[in-house]
Every structure is written in structure tokens, then in C-alpha cells.
Picture 1: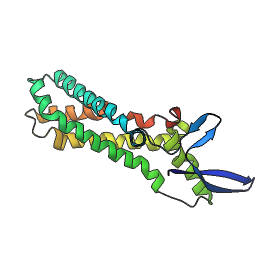
Picture 2: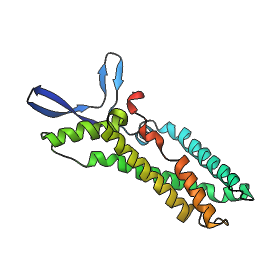
Picture 3: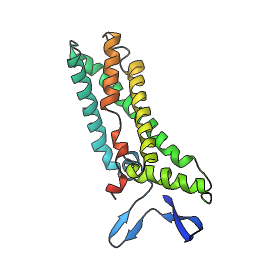
Picture 4: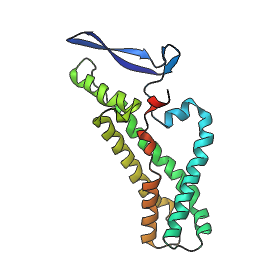
Length: 196
């Protein structure tokens, strides 16, 4: 059972954190908290993999083909066939690293009875998972996670995905950079509150 810590104010000068079930019913609405899109959504709704996997493949393929075309690379179809599977898998590896970085906010833990613990929970732990746009701290945390993922996409493709591709090193750098910019997980910024 997924649990989420919520704060209940006892009086004006004392507060405690109590565990609360993630499914909170209010009338006919059910809100789910402490979820990171899209990884947790994929876990909760496994059929989403049938949409995400081919969609990511098509996005990666489109970026590879268009960038090769822009760079004036010959035999685009042959070269794209050689690298697309590795590029696609390495993109998922980078996304999982970024997701782990987002989840670190839940692993780093403070005593919720202290002012620091309450601040951490309110401004980072809950906000990153539920709505990264809620405050500047959660927003910056997620931006850093997206940047880490983007850097991983760049280096993974440069060192592994495109290594054997018979093109100039300069072109490999540009192709890796295009993949890093255009396939970064910007959806990390999407508030899960919009879905539940």
C-alpha cells in the first residue's frame, strides 16, 4: 500500500505528521499523491507501456532521421536502422536515472517534527511528487533532474549508441546533442495532480 505523509496542525505552535492513505476520497473524487510521472503511472497502469514504448521509439527515430538529414549524412535509412534500437534503450536508461534523481527527494529524510523536516516535506518531497510547479524549490529540483537525464542521453549516445556509426565525430556530437535536447523527459514537470 502506497502511503503519503500529510501534515495536520494540532494548534498554532505545534504540528505533527501523520501517515495517510494515498487514496483520499472527497465526494466522488479520488486524489492520488506521491507519484512521479510517467514511471509511477506506468507501474499503476501497465497497459500504458503499450503507448509509451512505441511513442518513445517514434520520437527517437524522428530525431535521429531529421538530425541526420540536417547534417547531410548519406544513407540515412541504413544508419538509422543501425542505431535506433540502442538509442531507444539508452534513452530509457537515462530516463530511469532521472526518475531515480527525482525519487531521491523521498529517500533524503528529515525528522518531520522539526522545522527543517516540515520545510523539506512541504517544499520538496510533496511538491516534486505532486506538483513541481508549486514552488521554486520543487521546480528547480525537477529542472536539475531533467538536465541530468539530458546529459545522460548525450553521453550514452555519444559513447555507446552512435559509437560504431560510420560518420564524423563532429556529427556524432551533434546527433547526440539533438537527442539530448529533443528527447529529454520534460514530462517530469507535468503535475500528477492534473491526472487524479
